[in-house]
Length: 330
Image 1 (cartoon, rainbow, N blue to C red):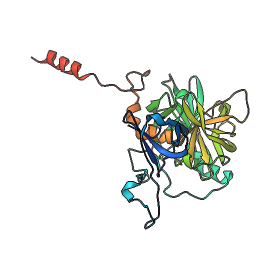
Image 2: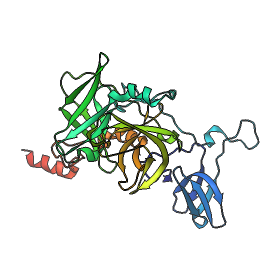
Image 3: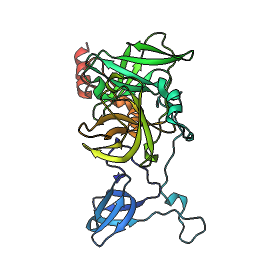
Image 4: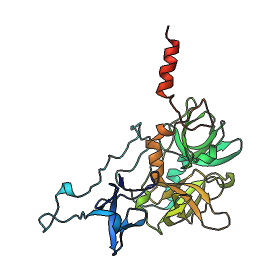
C-alpha cells in the first residue's frame, strides 16, 4: 500500500517528482522530503506534511528529475510521472461534465455574470431552498445533499435568455440521480418533457488556485436569486470535521448552499455549502476535485427510488440468491 493521500474524496495535489520511503510493515509513503532529522524524516504528501520515524524506515529512495546527459540523471521510467487523462467532453457520458483544455483568460465579474448566470439555478423543496448549477446541456445539475435531504418533491427554477430578456421557468420533473451525504453533494436531472438545452458551466481545478486569488459566487441567499458576491480565497486547506474546504471571504448565506464558486476564468472551483454564523467573511466551499470524484463514481452513490432514505443500491448476497433460486426450482 502506497500512501498518496489519506483523504480519498478530497482533491489533493499530485506530486509528479516524488521520493519514496519504504516502511517495516511493507507499506510506503510517497511525497517530497522537505527535512531530515536524526529521529524523523518529514514528507510533504500534497495537503500536509507528516513526520515518519526513522525506526520504521527500511529504505529511502529519492526520485529527482534531472536534465538529460547530466551526471546521475535517471531514466524516464525511474521518475514518477502523472498519467494525464484527456479532458472530458459533453459527449463523455461517464464524466457528464466538461473542463477547458486550456485555461481561458481572466475577465471581470460583470462579463462572467452575463455569460454564466443562466447556468445557476434555484433548487426548491417544501421545507426550504438552495442553489445549484448545470454541468451539461441535458439538465444534470449539482447541489448540496443537505438542500434535498429527506425530500421527494423538488423543483428547479431556471432563468432562460430569450430575445435579450430573462425568462423565469420552474421545472418540477426532477430526478435524484446520485447523492453523497458525507461529501454533501447531490446530482439531479431535469426530466420535464420538451425542456430546452440548458446553459452549463465548466469545472476548473481548485489545486491551481492561489491564496489571495479573487473568486465569486452566484446563488440565492435568503431566496434572492441571481445574487453575486465577490471575495478572495483565504485558504485552500481548511480542515473541518475530517474534510478539507476552500475558505473564502465571499459572502455565503442560507440559500447559497449548492451554488458555484467561480474563479475569474469562469470555471467552477468549489460548491458553496456553509459559513460560520457568528463571524463575517468566513464562507466555505467543497473543492471541485470532490465534485469530479463524485460524478465519475456516481454509480457508487446511485439513488434508490424504492428506498428514499437510502442513497445506495445494494445487491443481495450471492448465497441468498442461490438459495432463492433453489427454492423456486421445480
